Image (cartoon, rainbow, N blue to C red):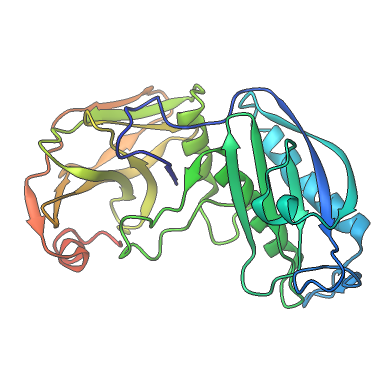
Length: 297
């Protein structure tokens, strides 16, 4: 999970919401005759036989945002009721001077998110009949994490298709630990273990670093490398048999570097600081990097 604007800002200065309580309202877009209107759509029956009335729909939104509250990042969400609306500005521009979660009818995607400022957010949601309730609650938390300041993982490295996007914190095919690491990092929360270091940027752009399992070669965590070359992981758990791979771009070529010695982050350790990782090899494509390193990109 990667913060927005990581290419130009220094580490520690990524966009994030102000730490405070955010009262929010839930709206059902019910404009008469509009194709996106959810008027007369309830109750909705999902493929897993879950039946959503408006009240149960609202309950799930509250549950999803309450799980973010438990992360104790200094941001909390407080439910202030729900109502119907026929205002296009609220449903589609999502900016009306309030924090809003808007449900509308659209079968094409799960939702959209818009952080308007550090003190205001808006979320649009769709709930389709062929979805499961777990998909819906994960979708909501995914959109809320966008509002917290995170982008999709594969925005730059389109070849890393198996890496999940920002997640719903419930393990639905996504790395909860990686998401929590990202939230802790940009909201400056302490963790039991840190792994950090510097890379000589030397004109590199879009630099990222990965912690991966030395035996399986599967990626465990992903983090940006800032314009000065600094990178950091904040972890809650020790890691056995791990290694690291960094990738960046320069002149349309991928440059990469790999730590050759396996590491173990034990329970009695506070972490590691690395300075020996260098982007010294290059390739025209990610497949070649995968073949050379064995890492599952």
